[in-house]
Image (cartoon, rainbow, N blue to C red; front, side, top):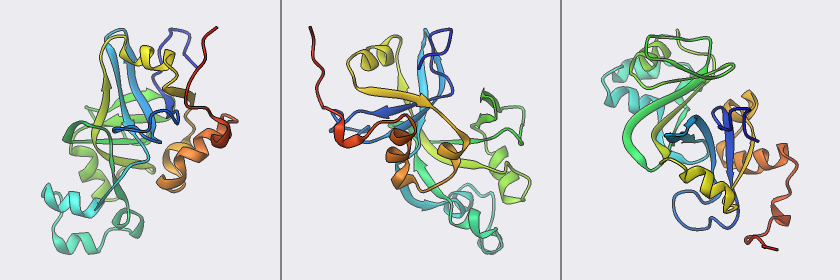
Length: 194
């Protein structure tokens, strides 16, 4: 589902079963930016073993004692593998109830912040109500994503707040397919040509 301008910013990419090797097997990617210059997105359903307090301590945002006093939801928030590009760089995909100078509005109700400001706000209870923290991102050069979609590598779908911020990451692939009415058992790995 392309926007009127032909670009997918604010939409989901859902990997087809044929993508059985590499970084994108059974992945769901939220497209944060898509233009004629290329595309950038955050993989939503690949988790790291680290949780948010680990990252906050590593960056010096909080100390060990402060980590204990974080709300349970933040203490348990797992860091996502956002993609294979710049895996040491952090991104927070979040609801639009938090905005700072470096925040970019991706779509209605969804923003992206790639500075430590949002992590400080989260640690103080002043951050966004909904947040997903990722290290790294998925990137495509000019025309590359369009070619992959034309090659039947990706399905596209509408990104709802519940698909982005609610539910478990390990069921996100199936939930996204269900939202667009696709039974994963009926998907074929190859496309035909007439």
